[in-house]
Amino acid sequence: MSDHPASRRDVVAAAVTMAAAGAASEAQAQAPSNLRFSNPPGMSKPPSYSHVVEVNGPHRTIYLAGQTGVDANGKVAEGIRAQTVQVMENIKTALASVGGGSSTSSS
Image (cartoon, rainbow, N blue to C red; front, side, top):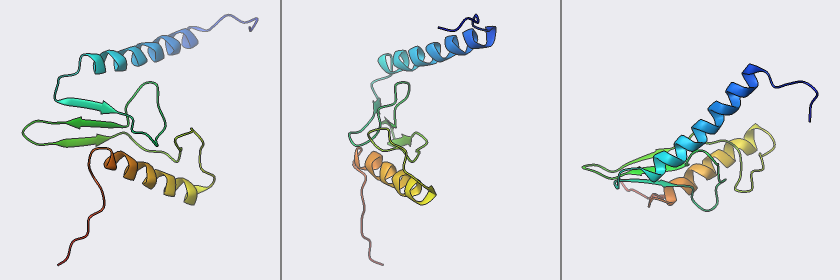
């Protein structure tokens, strides 16, 4: 433990972080039945947000959280190329979890 007391900034930052995490959990618990929050297998498990939110109503809409070059184990890929590949794999995994996938179309 540090000999210095926590600054006001440290206390406020910790409180905001805890409130945001609690609000995210509460929002999911109180979500309308037409919303589905998920963190698909094969992706990291963030504690305060969901990678995928599916909204079913007159139209179906899928929202993806901003993706990074982090794999399911929380390891960051080395280098910009590897991180870009990981981002694309994460997007494919997220979309596949809600029924998206590659399709071939002929013109």
